[in-house]
Amino acid sequence: MSMGFRKKLIEWLFEKSQNIYTNMFKNHEAWGISTCDLLKYPEGSFGKHLGIFLDSNNFELIPKVERHDAYHTLTGYGTKVEDEIALQCLCFGNGKRSLYLYGAMILGIIILPDYYKYYYKSYYIGKSANAFHHYNYKKLLNVSIDDFRAVIFTKKQIKTIKTAYS
Image (cartoon, rainbow, N blue to C red; front, side):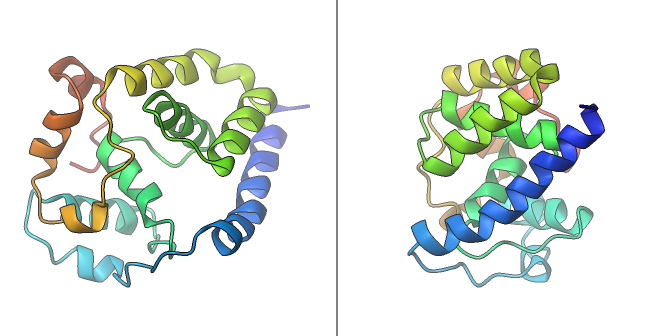
């Protein structure tokens, strides 16, 4: 099976499982914030960076799972399939536990083992970082992204974070 086919398979699995997971397991309120709203936040704020991340990928926040895009913004991980799996590994290392995380991580590693070193490095970064998976990210949109990252990651880890949206 070619890598291209395996990546497409994982994308399809993510797409199909996302709505099911959101509707069955997420019972909290959606943020009700658009990308346009986020882009109005002050320069350097977490909210502004989240808006830039979403805008640059032509995304809107997915209701009830907004935190996932917040993780992308905080960590600098992209949206390629291997980045999505690596982000799940980082979150697992950081202590996050959910059925979706387990499924995405396990299936991703099995179907796309080519990036195992990347996944392991991500797990290790998450494990050695201060916990971040429990925050109410909606309440942190005005916080400086640099200050926020400094609370969670070491200076060395911050240097390794892909800051494409900074």
